[in-house]
Amino acid sequence: MNISKYNIQELFENSILSDYKLDKDIKGWLDTIILFGEKQKGVLTVIITGLVYKHFHPKQDVRKHQSSMPDGYSGRTFDTKYITPFMKKNQFPSMAESGWLTRSLEQATPYVKGYTGSISDKGLKDAFLNLYNAIETENCIDDILAYLFIGLVSKRDKQNIVLSVPANLTISETLKLIKDHIDFPYKNVSGASRLPNLAIYSAYESIFGNDNGRYKDKFLCNLDSHTASDKSTGSIGDVQINYSNGKPFEGIEIKDKKISIDMLDTIYSKIQEHSTVSRYYLLSTYDDELELDILNKKIMQIRSKHGCDVVVNGVYTTLKYFLRLSNTDSFISSYAEQVSKDKALKYEHREAWNKLCGTLN
Image (tube, rainbow, N blue to C red):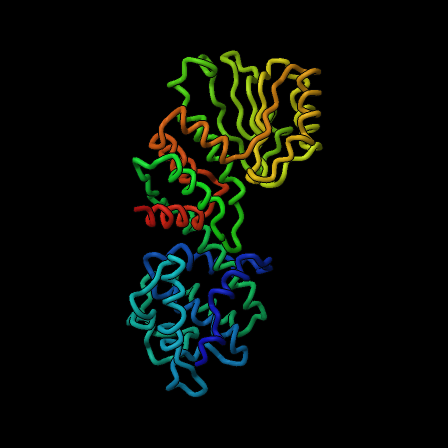
């Protein structure tokens, strides 16, 4: 087999971005396979092997899973070389070597109704055999792959990943770690634009409770959903600090693009009904591309009309300032907690954090 011919990872990454259309019976069988995935790794592996092989070899009847069968193929060989390594790489339930090492799946008869292998749960066995039949009788291989892979990713991402919390980092080391996490080359996964919000929120969280100055008797509002608009939530920004009476005191908007005049106009429209807002930070991850000369006139106009002090700055410059007011341990602990629980983030974001922490000296 030519390894370049079987790019399972590429197939997977394309599948999880694909739409699918399946009848409820097939979805139900797939849900059963996913449900038992951890306890019955062999069944899951053998199903995926058949699906993937069928994708690359549409004319092969994958129910004939041994080369000794007439017109059969070696499912075990394909699994050992391609599928099990893929499963391990993506941290899906996987066998040590091959699903065909499971006695109930290695019987020398095709996977058809009446198959004699003793798969322990009858519902699972029915789902397994029905799916193998659908692979051959229904023209929906890619739809089945998409549904199955998306389901596996969803189940994997729900599992708790213990995040590293490095201690005693310098401010420079902390900033580099955060920037590397935000800029990590995530592939085919959304949510990374949430990370700057979590970093700024964590910076505020690390100084609250220890501040007897500007933020005394104020409280840090919970972060809203990443997909919720400020208009729908009633908030004035991505991060918000309120007075003890609930009125807005300070807002922070975070952008992953250059700051523009239009953004300042949007901020003014948000705060003009809130006379209590005394300061508003408009931050960008493009720290080195702030055109303050162009923006300052609009900033002064807002201050003159409203009284709010609008501060345009970079995300990392702002983090550096806040870290001087608190300590890096408190900030890192807060950030790791936010990354761990934020629903907009995926397994890949948490895995990347642990990888980056593992590179620290």
